[in-house]
Image (cartoon, rainbow, N blue to C red; front, top):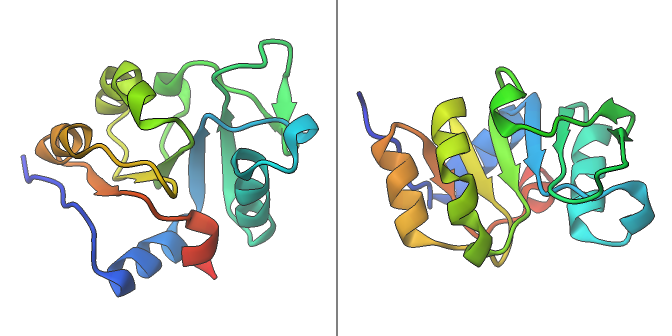
Length: 140
């Protein structure tokens, strides 16, 4: 298995952000939380043409977010170009096994989210990682 990369080059990060067409959003929030980044960032990315697969952690009664059916199990999202993560660094470890099982080509940790050990586990499994970057900003 080829190891993944920790992406740090701004042009490579931008290119991957713009290329992603189907994006699972772990920790997405519903429209009732529209003023929070975990809602408006994926909404903007969706408006730019990407398909969003909402994977909320909370909000058990919500069935759709951004007009898309909610998926409760990260392993069940199907093929995606990336998983965009809106979870605190302290909460990342609980999602590691699901991310390894899904094996997306890229895991994107939103602005302010960084965990080098978590990223190392993903890259060792062949998954590229972006840490502490806003997908909305990088897509332009």
